Image 1: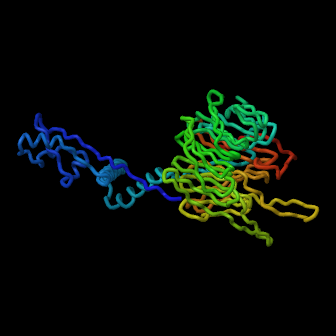
Image 2: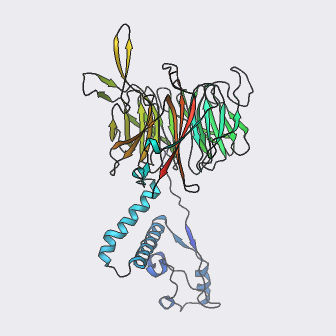
Image 3: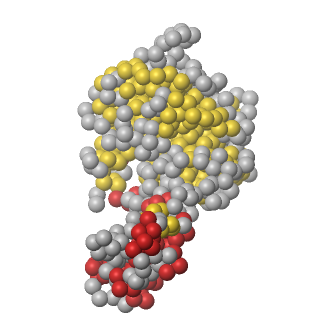
Length: 489
């Protein structure tokens, strides 16, 4: 897809000329004679200006405007920024060597600011959580008749939602774990119904906690009020199942993914459709986004993940299809579908698929930075005709604690697995596993500074949300499980 050029703002900066004396305005200074003192805002050096001019020329000069180009503005702001860093560093450490300051302190500060601006700053907190099973606080919320397919947790960890194949959505209190409200699903085929009339497949809560978005097999996106528990608007532009939803951080811009191979953008505040993105060659199975105006998605059996740059109107394609071998046999497994995705930060994301591989991607590389084969192990089944069949446990859900080194994955092997990102962001290892019986269809994790709580919410069912290839009954309940993660500073 062609990339539209990006035009920087060319509006010129205007600076008013204040008179140095009463009724004697100072003439404008030319661009070529601009001094550092003037750039820094110092107006005390008035003797350097020529004041032996006629009153008429002074008036004409005072009416002129000093124009500043975009390049000059960047230089001026950069100088002021570096001076502020030096001043702050001097206040903190007192006497310092200028060479050491330039080499170490300023470089470190600039890198930190750049990381924060680009969303690359990682909190190394994975080792500070206690994942011991006997000490882990857990709760189970039941209310759906059919498997739970999606969960969504508010940013402040006050409420969470669960959705099901029965078409209903339940709102839960995250403190008492009691049911607060139920959006009942309608009968299949009913028209003009304010809700879902088929399986609900995805949920998302806006960053400000104002809206809940839900999508499902009925091709509909519903927007609900979180505070008032009422239906707001319905979007019906998708032509197939709505498989993924994500709100942009700090904005009420909504991204939706569908089996119709498109991604659509919505302005929820204006209740308006914005545009459609094309590119995937198969059903889009998942989508995620953070603060920048872009999103990442997985295309199922086209075996790609894609980064969509909305402003540039372009996309980057990341190829999957990894082949892995089992160590103790000649069996090999090919990644036939990439099914789930989660953004760690603006430059890193993880994916999982039907070959049991979890892959770590850098947006600047077309191949995975690191891949973990058979992350949830081997599923052994017995067939009357073929005997023992070994297949990997699919990765059915992934989620991460944003901008940190901690993320989670789910399947139906009986555990939610906990992973820690390496210090160089080039690999990861399992550090714990949390017992969960059933198919893990959805995972959400949030940490709230206000309540000082970190919650892990898991949607569990007897079936996969996308089909009925697996049916688990023994000791499995359709429910939502919540784990309170203890954090030690």
